[in-house]
Length: 261
Image 1 (cartoon, rainbow, N blue to C red):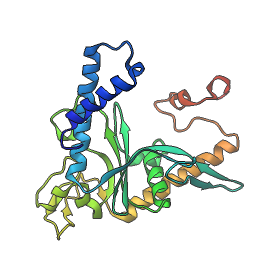
Image 2: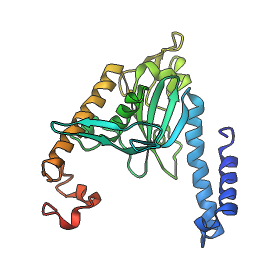
Image 3: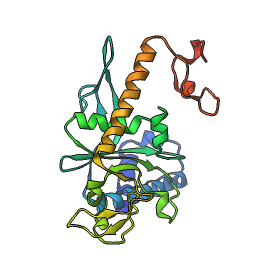
């Protein structure tokens, strides 16, 4: 119920306490109260973003590649093999046949084309590629800065990423008005809608043409393929290095027995 996120969250928490009390066993009333307030604040922001646009949150924790997942897996065609990538997408918003990827990020959330170029963060474009292969038109890919202390500044909770400019109005209906600056996505309308295709201010906008968005996704897929081929060949040097540290190794199950580490 997006009309009153706080009431909806309080109702959900009450149901959890009544039906699954073990989840919060030992938690004090004040702690539960703090969690409820934080959840209500985050939900209010998400609800506002959805209500301002035409996209609906159609899938949450959407799995792909492993039955009975709603989406088929992403096939990676290698020189000598075909692998199927599996995963879970935090949220998929749909408008007609178009879809955008939302990935929740705690802490420092920053979308960078340089990170994609160097293979450091290819998660979002690969997810969007998965949706495309499942019949959706790629509309955009975003990080949602998952903070429990949203500032009044719109930049603190705006979706961070890139999107196809032809879906600008669907991202935020306010972009149909001349001079409107969106706090849903990074975009500002220079001219009004025609009727629903606003002209956006290019400087600082995260809107791109559809071909550019597709090219970024294709590049990320090529990085994924290259990484898979390297791993299957036995090459295991951590790459890219971050500040000279083997930070990538911290998530690897082979760390205890790996000579590279």
